[in-house]
Image 1 (cartoon, rainbow, N blue to C red):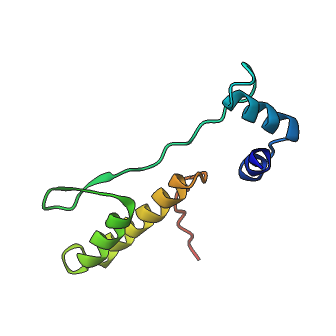
Image 2: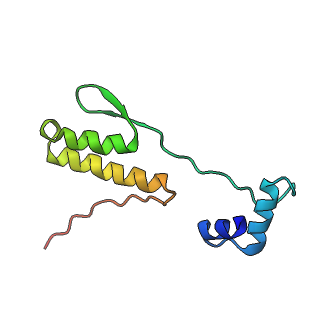
Length: 105
């Protein structure tokens, strides 16, 4: 079951590599692919004009929405965009940055 779960969670992981990784993790093998947990975001510090606040990812979204009158719509949108990016990164997705391009008609 562990091999199946590993192959499902790691795109492109072959049967042999998954078996070797599980064997290494269980101490039955000294060499082979290493299974490591990826980093996760525990909290984030943001200066909201009245000083720094430290929040977890859920708290970031809630704090932004509860301060809409102080921060304004455009700043709330930026914070919610940041929240979306951080949530994607925290779940192991690849994040890329694209410059906005101005198109003249």
